[in-house]
Amino acid sequence: IGHPDRIFPVGRLDKDSSGLILLTSDGRLPNAVLRSGRKHDKMYNVIVDRPMQERDVEKLASGVTITTVGQRDGRVKPLTAPTMPCRV
Image (cartoon, rainbow, N blue to C red; front, side, top):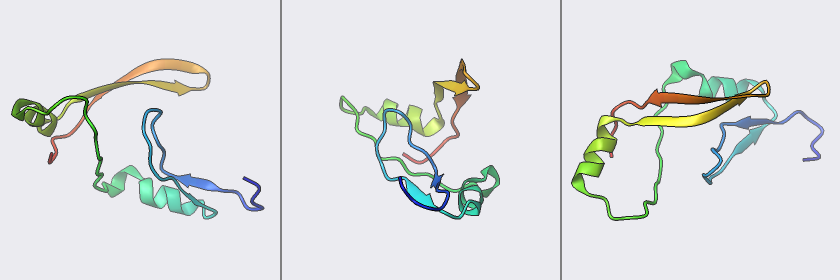
């Protein structure tokens, strides 16, 4: 981006998402904010392609299983993990 300092992103966006990425020249900030021990609450705004039924909301609130593709060191592998129960 043509900045003289090294720039670090604070967070990331998934492929099919949109939002704001913060950039910083302080490499300590992303680690301090995103370290898993911090347990920051996350909020997502979601647009669905059909009306939500009460059972759909209940399923989301109880936690869902997410599968995605991880890529590291030129290798691709599916990653599957359950989410925690949450407020919907």
